[in-house]
Length: 266
Figure 1 (cartoon, helix red, strand yellow):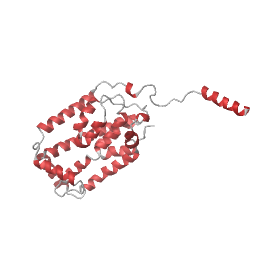
Figure 2: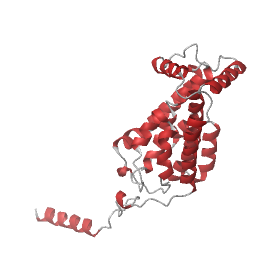
Figure 3: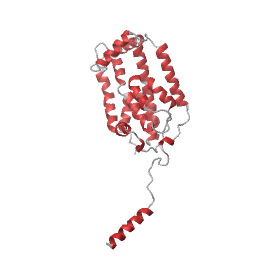
Figure 4: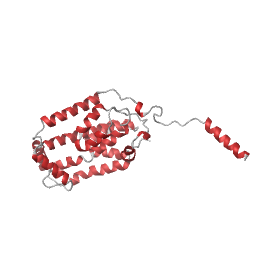
C-alpha cells in the first residue's frame, strides 16, 4: 500500500508540475469581448449593391411590379418544382433552381465567423436569403466584420454550424444538387439559341425573372468572395485568389465543390 501511495503521490506531483496544454485558439478572450472591425470598403460595396438592387428592382427593372403573369409564374414554380413545366424556359428554370443551392453555400461560408465580433446576428439574414436572396443578405454584409484569422475555436460554433454547415457531407450534397441543375432544367437537350432568346424575352417582360436573375448573379459573386475569405481562415491563404476566381468562373457548382473539399476548423 505504501508503494501504491508513493506512486500516486509521484504522479500527482508530476501532473501539477507539468506545463498546461495551450489550445490553438483564443482562450483568453470571450467571443462577446471581440469588438467588430471598423467598417471598410467591403461594407460600403455591400451596402451600395444592396441599395442599387432595391432601387433598380422597384423603380427601373423591366416589366410591371405585381404583374399577374409574374404571380402565376411563381405559383407554377412553387407548386411544380420538378419536373420542369413545359411552359417554363429551360435557362430560367436553371436560374430558379440555383436558389436551392446558393443560400446554403453562403450560410456555410459565413457561419464559422458569424459569432465573433459582429454587429448583427447572422441567422435571420441567412434564413431570409432562401426566400429573398440578397435583399435579406445586403444589410448584414453592409455591417459585417470579416474574420480571416485561423485561430478560431470550433467550440464557439453553434449546433447547426458544427454539425451541419461544417460537415463534408453538406458540401457533397450541395455539389451534387448543383451538378444536377443542367439535367433537371433540360438545358443539355435544348437548342441553345432558342433557350437564350426565350430567356431574354422573358427577362425583358417579367420583373420577377429580371430581378431574380440579377439577384442570383449578385449572390454568386458574393459566394466566390466568401470562398476566398474562408480559405484564408482555414490555412489555404496561398490559394485564396485562385479559389475565388474559380468559384466566380464556375458559379453555384464551384463554391459547392469547395465546401466538399475544404479542411475543417479544428
